Length: 338
Ligand code: PBG
Image: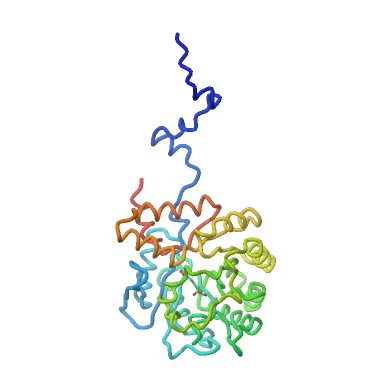
């Protein structure tokens, strides 16, 4: 028998990575990460009124919905197996003020949405943000006093807003405002009000990012915002600072952590999962969504494949789930797979 050893076998010492990649069945057998419907959290935008499904120009395929339509959407999402929704209100301009006082109203848009969804579709989780930006006349996440976003007064208010949201039926409070001490304050306020079961998903590392642009159009804060959010969000250059910030949230009692934006910050996802072992979620934000949609609309990329690849990348980076505007599209695709 002639020796069929090749020069490459001598180079690799007879190891060949491609053996495991040779067929669909081997590739499936060795696949390390898989995206399932359980990984998806669907962020939705809510507007006052009824019967409204209004496209958001900067986010093709995403709509603002009135509460009745949001309930229908929640039912559809639950039927597909999506575990939870994250709700964002676009409230009337007349209700927005310097301090975001409407955030404390028991019957405000976000709380009425929670109530309606939890009544009609009790088996889907509702995650509510307590940042003040949908409620302020200046679009900032906190209370503005003399040109400054004041930390402690904001924390006191969002802790109260969190209790009001819990009373409306919110399952998880997700504060995205990045004020210092907010996780501990929200936990204490929830517990004092008897909401020991309501969890906290901290937007632990929220970066001062340009990727939020389309979202600001979606909730009508784009034109309002004066200046930027750099005094409270994290500098995109800083990974170690992000880890310190997340560590404080863990100490203060966060149940889950979030990284936002997602894809440009996969290193942070990985470091958080490795360091804390808590459930880690990535928020694939509006700008990430829109870039994929825009390139696909131009025929420059295969939108569906890029969507699935980005979501799988989050899994590989250690994420337990992803908040994504693609959630429904992906859930439908996954439902068709055997
Ligand atoms: C603010 C908030 C932002 C997003 C959700 N809540 C960022 C901002 O406006 O500064 C962004 C979500 C997205 O871009 O999809 N609390």
